[in-house]
Length: 202
Image (tube, rainbow, N blue to C red; front, side):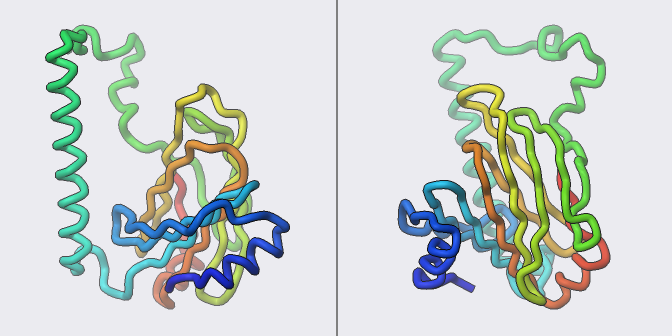
């Protein structure tokens, strides 16, 4: 469900903010339609999850995901070849692992908590930012997750958050500080699952 610009204007007026650019519409890694509105004091993302067909039965989503991953791997390989040509040092088996023996598991996402109607607030520190998440109910089939991002560690760092449960999955990235509002528009089955399991945050 796309949000008309009139609705975006109402949201903007209710927050006394100004829409800085036209909305950007993309498709997320798991087939989620993402609309992003950038205001002068916060960013609003609206997520529309695909119909009742699960990711494992939706061949269009699977095709998109395979193409997305193929492009990522190709660009990583090209970057590696360019580094090899510039004679930059690569990590070897002896130099790639830090002195901490658990560092080899750093690529795994770290569970930070659960957001639900019963557990409406979550605070944690990521690699780049301090996060404060707050649940806000909108309608019977949608809710907002207000993500306050602060205390950026370095100029170019960014954090990724993975939101998911048994019915939905979404990866969100954070490069800019401030408030980010994410609207989750759900199907009735996903609402039941969210009410029962909440939303896991990694």
